[in-house]
Image 1 (cartoon, helix red, strand yellow):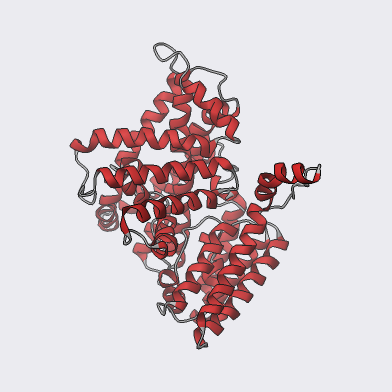
Image 2: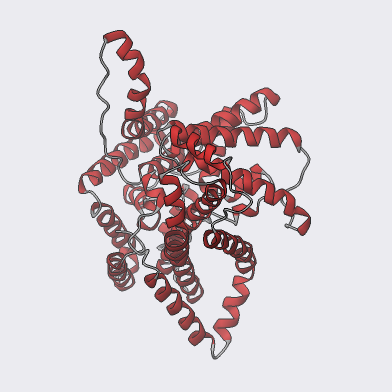
Length: 466
């Protein structure tokens, strides 16, 4: 079930009623049953895989917390989790890479396995690893089996994040959540803002033009390719941040807080700032569980460069098994390396000002171009798209409506930051004003109607494929 579907609306209404009606001590059990049912409704077989993986990892984590030699259990837990991820996600890619060598040695090409990728495996694998490592480091006690299952399978974030750590959800599960009027109001706004991002902007306004150009790269002029790159940049942002907003909104309605995953990333002034604002929970995971254990920036400039490149290459490979994703991750790694050694003392934690506009615009264009191999189906398509970018037509061949839509998206991206900063004040005003509830209800109703009329309600989220 997709968050942006009528079926999910019915499902969540049933879960919400059961959760609220249940005695407090049974509410997490209601959530666990709902989460397992939610996953089973996709492909029931994969629920067996998920439960088997979680059960084995729980036993290893429990023994690790009691053992005098915990490292062996950590290695077993991480090895099991990443091995399953590798088999389902990278087996075909590995065989494809080895095919020329096998053909040269044996005279025939190997059969490339056709495995269906279990939904959400990339996300829940990273959560399993992070919890195992945190228990090993002594940062978290091993939870009970029920808490362990619910931490990973909690349905708002199960399929596409945010990627949680134990400390972000387990204490809330132990407390049973905390539903308040303010949290409920914020949850409604988050959900319907995410719904509008997904259905109106990602699916209805941006997807058609981007899909048309990327499906036949090189077949039209340069401006169309450039606008298509911009369109996809905003499409994937509104699609993925829309999912996160909906996940956070659903959690708030149930009384739980999930961390932010996006903070207007296209207003970043440097590559490192971009990765602090884009898919923030993945960026933190890669930093804390890969980059820092590799040595981070503590072993000299050469080692720092190597660590950055390894981290981003593996981050690209996490998104998908293909050369395009490796290139995408590698380009971001190079961008981080160059920026690091050109601007060591630059402070990007201060507020954005108009003087930052040239840097923001330059980085935005670079990031949009790097999205090209991420979006293209094959490396050949990426090359063809690049040729299309440098073709003629820049003086007279601009697609006017798609260009205007991209411009509107950038303006809204700027406004989104201002709105997010003022949202607590707006909520407080609406809560105390006599006309506040009527206005709030009317705005939410308008968003829902607009989203449904935009005919994007059945489109799958982009990150479901990862």
